[in-house]
Length: 261
Ligand SMILES: Nc1ncnc2c1ncn2[C@@H]1O[C@H](COP(=O)(O)OP(=O)(O)O)[C@@H](O)[C@H]1O
Ligand SMILES: [Mg+2]
Image 1: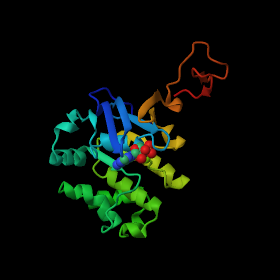
Image 2 (image 1 turned 135 degrees about the vertical axis):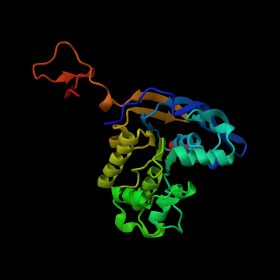
Image 3 (image 1 turned 180 degrees about the horizontal axis):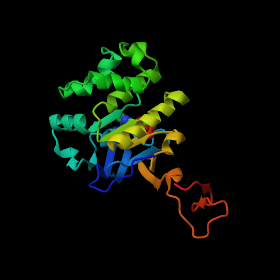
Image 4 (image 1 turned 90 degrees about the vertical axis):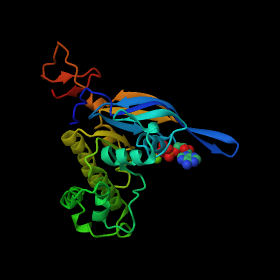
């Protein structure tokens, strides 16, 4: 179960965020005036067809890309006010990012890749990096280079690296997209464990209904706009009706039976 979103200032505040690209004569609006915020410990999936702007939105929120207009506040800090060094520091301190395309350093082993964020901070943590590799089932691949790993294994190294700083907020772009069902399941558990144990806020792009069903909130994008912002059906709190059925089960508002929480 997700960690309940605790009240407090938002971890992420996105206001009228817009990203445009010039394509020859035309101006292409990829992210179109998006506004939303996420509280501490909140879990949120982003759904939407290919090309709807999901990856671009994540990159803007994590400070990896600059908007054409609008703003992103991370932990109350406006990313637009920070120079490159301070932005890099904020990212290293507070943000984890799992890339759709892995983005591992080809000249470093799996273990060394996981340790990169720690080394940038000048912190030791080899045993914690090992522990994370173990959790993603890759302890026997620790000394392999990315080229010696399958796509799914590289994805898992990317996850371990994103977790290593115990980030305040984790952005993940289709983290189970390249994984078989069993490994995907483990990765989902790991994401939710991170949320539960460290209160990490999660913003996850996914086509995986198993995963989106486990986040508390689901945003849907189309053409760079949010077309729906709803609570996940499976996690909606059970509504207790006074007239309980004889079976003793409670019914939620959709009329489907569910066990009391
Ligand atoms: N650097 C870029 N230059 C021009 N167009 C881009 C660039 N990056 C993304 N796009 C376009 O923006 C749209 C949204 O891309 P993306 O955010 O990757 O979508 P999604 O992740 O939802 O599939 C696509 O049409 C894509 O071609
Ligand atoms: Mg994408």
